[in-house]
Amino acid sequence: MTGLYISGNSPIHGLNPLIKLSSAVPVILFLTLVTDAWTPLVFILINNALVILGGRISPL
Image (tube, rainbow, N blue to C red):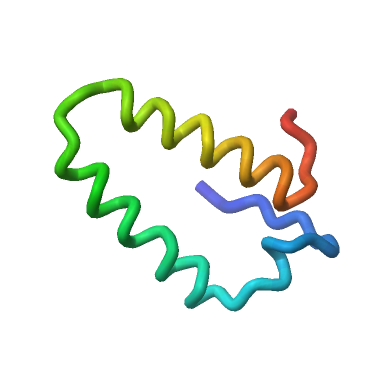
């Protein structure tokens, strides 16, 4: 499986990769401790919205 990189000028593209990683790690650790199904679902929806809007990519 290969990743799809879409070059562009967006807020997410300009960030340092270490900042992206350090912002994701606390969320991942929090989600490992959650026992209900709704909290991860909300985080998935928020993540998708941030990637689509912040990365300026097509939802398709």
